[in-house]
Length: 243
Image (cartoon, rainbow, N blue to C red):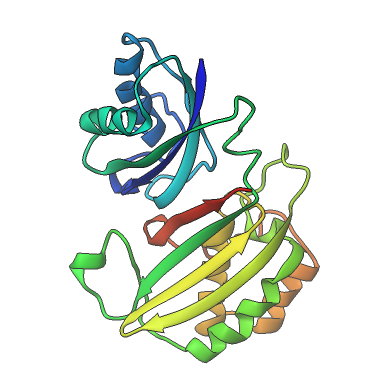
């Protein structure tokens, strides 16, 4: 039995997130169904590095699986892609050590959030439309989250998650014509954390809350803060970094 690491990109618009769902309309379900053809139609479970939510996209999601096969890596990828819906594409597959784990071995992740301030139906599934833009205000607040913080205020509360501290190494807004992007890199992310951060920073930009309010949410973490959460469709899991 061999272990494989795979990198997959997907348009999450029509799926209920990455993780397997009862209705079988998840990215994981689609990949496992396709992968089963390489195992005499027997189910092969995959383990994803990140549980992206419904509507969230990915360019660099990673998963691992075990398979007994003599096929080379390229042929395995082609065989899986052949049976996948057009919204999902295996970018590459590599054989790895038997103890490799896509989630636990990840060192840090990179997310990108996309906004647009001139509405266009061409971007309705990938960009969040915002009416006003103040890049200077966003740049002022972006650096507050760098370093290690307790992000309880910026997450969906889960009593089973005892550690809500994350270390953020990059937090940056930038503008390309009418499109606004946010890049964030960190060692781990809580449930809905990036979307809460983006939504709250945009609230600061629109003067709905102050920068001091934002800073207080970091320094005095609270659960169930009911902050504004940016829509799922603007979020993209860009890359997961390993040793």
